[in-house]
Image (tube, rainbow, N blue to C red; front, side):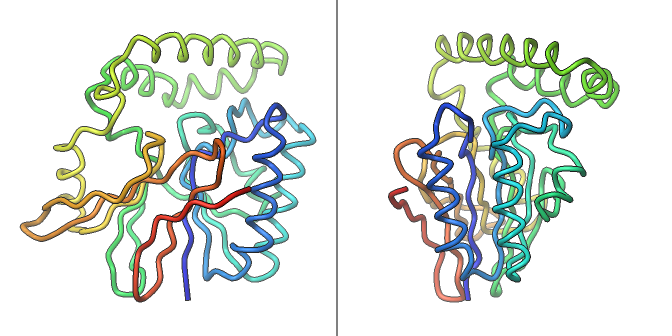
Length: 240
């Protein structure tokens, strides 16, 4: 019995090794799990379900094969792919979850999320996030022709990269009080998230009890997953 969590693969045509590693992971590791949760940024960018690139179709087919084998796959949007919608979910068989979800796994109450909302010290990013998550702005963007959306997305990624280069590592990490606040709000002792690309299991105190913040690594040179079983919670890295 095991449930697997991954995040921050940032799949794109420019990184075929990561794509191959993900396909291998689905067919050799995830296939033996009770469930797979993808906590955002599966893709480097997403400009709409109507952008039917071969990579997108390949990934949808691979996930659908996993789901058809009996392993459910759940998805929480990331900051790169928050526009993944119902059409891609149907094609892949994934179940879309809200940005924050509480699970009861083998007797542990666990909170899962992408993690960007915990980075509250980065006020510039939080203001940007609020803007692009405005429903009417998303609706307007998705009505634009694909070539315009691609141009806008490329400019936004370049702007984000330039902005992040001048920010301190502390600002771009989670705010410790934000972590405690969300664990307190949902009365949970476990939190699993991605986004920061800083894999670690942190021990802290929340609800006047020991608590744990489990951070997934990004798939740059190797894969990263958190494996939850009745006996343990493990952060595991593995080659593609």
